[in-house]
Length: 496
Image (cartoon, rainbow, N blue to C red; front, side, top):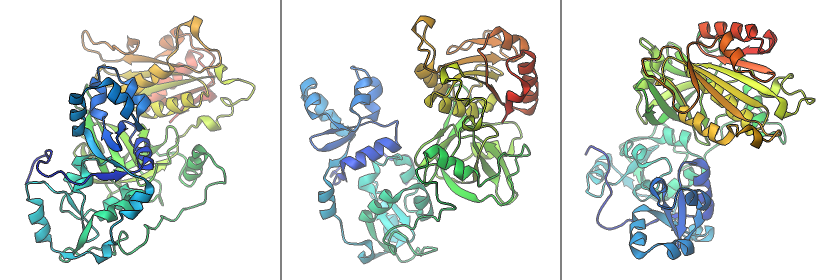
């Protein structure tokens, strides 16, 4: 059987059970998805949000909530019937779930791969995974899987135990036991199953305990201090850095260029990445071939990277060819060369945040670490941030949608409406090789390079830090222009 799965027909499967705590957990780990509860049933309404006649704010406000009374008062029966297309489960109490727990999977019958393959050919399009030599029928759960249906469909009938353990947390590892069909006698696992033989998956040993009461930012810093302080420009990782395995979860192209692609990678726990930090993705682990990338988005169980494919680029070409489910090795995360939290000039207590300013200068994909730093500075309200981006054409931006979202939240209002205590965000673009008629529609732009004349024309406020990230030639030229334009002193210029 081949092709994409289609909605199944015939007898409806038993609904998956969710507690209110499960719904909150799904919201936290999948911030782009939206759920509502009606009559103790759970609906995934993500697809309905963009085309809802009443706007999207009602979804934002009621995400994960019981909307039975509100829905009934505003919608007719025909709409209620169509909602069944988005039904993914029923809401139960924790006590009900405990009573419904099946016997332990160790007592399940033995199966053969031939029997499983025969089952997969049936019209109801079952989804059976092999985890450490045991078969799990996750068909009932698949259509509400937080990670999407496709990744499960691509692993039907395949041994996926190692990937499952890396990607999922304790909750999923506990829940999957409910779907165990039995041991597959002709598909012996490479090691005993932690899902069957152990009461709970063993936690990975911590390299060092986090400081008592440390904030997530401080814990990330403790993690980073166990690694080298700066990635060498040769793209070779320092010796002794542990490698980790991950898998591609999603992939999609930029809306403006087929040379730019975005990938998300699985992470068993939140990647302890500092603002502007990076990982080294390996294209040839045996030869040590790899390239540094800054994840622009980090969530509880995954992280996102923006790639630009370069002619002759070994690692970028390799990553462009990866598909969902493919394994990739990486090293890190590594801390950046500059941290706002450790900059004594920027953090001077005599200067309130509303009187601080950080200038970020990005060339090409160097926009990713700049976006990471800007997001952190603005979320913490540490300083005003100005970002200048240099790209060849308007088609060469990366994370432009994320930047527009940051502008919507922190962009400066008219002068008469500004709050002196609030820190704002400004962006300017420079197109260095624009074709005739090329323009940027979402931000102010100019044609030409970032030089001293341009910097002087911006009339920037007193600046406590300038951070630059781009190709080596760009970094050197822009750093000189910053000093020439007297934006700040040379010792306040930092190159990532």
